Length: 323
Image 1 (tube, helix red, strand yellow):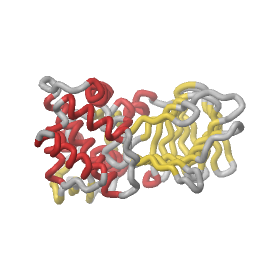
Image 2: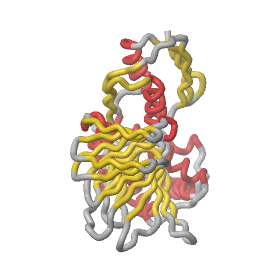
Image 3: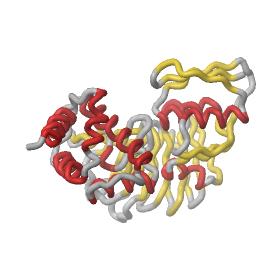
Image 4: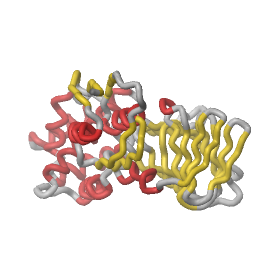
């Protein structure tokens, strides 16, 4: 066995056991530029049973980010195995921060039968539920569900997700969030339920949904958006492009409060943004950002419309001041 292959196996073993150190990620990534190494590594990865240890999850998350970054910079020079090409293409073409293989956590509780799927800040994922329903899970989001029955399909959501529900007349599909439920048979809709925003938004793209909250209910038709705040349900026409933007790896902001803008940017770029302002009036922002832009480019763009100052205070921390 040559030295490089032996080194690859050592790094792969350390990675799969959650013991890969910071300086070893670049070494592993360089070895994976070779097509044979890439095929071997992914075969090993596909047959590996993920550990529940936090360190192993963090290893996969870091490696996923590095693969994405390096592939984007060197895509015109890279030659990969077919399996590797498919993974990289999925990232580059769709603009994902992660592909399905980069799912942060998907665990099955063998005692209770509960499936938990999570994406951390700075990531998002596309998954398929047991019934064939397609789900895009946004950054800093969590989806849980018990095994589906013949009569019902129920999932619980914290954060944000876009659903393409597989139609089943005999088994309605229900999305539960803190404070409201969305009931459908087969349709396409987005649910935003971040606890920090103190409201829920349900936007309907296709079909019809029934939303229940605090003893009240509302039926949505295509193009409707429902805002749920406390016991208030307010229906309005939706901007579908704006709502769907995060799935396409971009944000379309339209008069978004500064607090929400900062939360979403923090989730998107996996940074903590602290801000302070002496202004008494509410501050709103309108603009569009894409994944190709760095957090610094985004802040520079915001500065054109809202006078701000910012500085990096730690590896993933930024202090923002409103002038």
